[in-house]
Length: 173
Image (cartoon, rainbow, N blue to C red; front, side, top):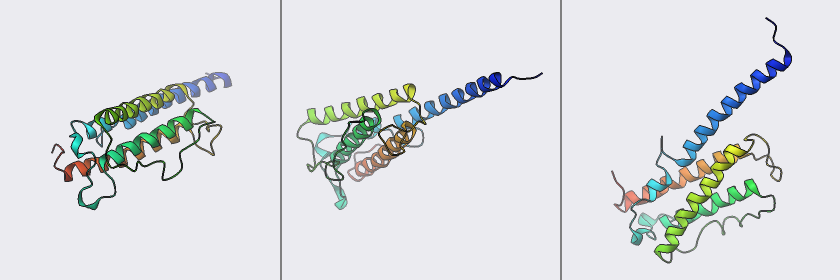
């Protein structure tokens, strides 16, 4: 049986779509946390407000500073991925809050909500974008690269949050 070139290309296209679908599913799992590491929401769950500004053992950051940094960096990667006119904050001073703790619980809660909303918005890009295409206004970045960067960056700082919680005796064993 002879396969035409068009049929062959259609077959390859179906295979590639399936592989991309598998990759998107795995990226979503990675971005949402879990599996090999703690997810963001679990890392900050049931955290006493009075501990957010603590820096045990001379560590450089408090939990609040790490969470606010995750928010800023993730927001920046999301906006960069979507908007050619987006201007990133100045590195490093505008990526880290100076305050050790949020001013109130409302600020804390709003920050958590913003991280979740921005992550959901980025995850939606995985379903609507060509993962491999260069972002037009970037210098080689793609949605795939930004997804991996968000996952890597967040996992790194989430681990720091867990360590601080352990040092403060505020982590489940």
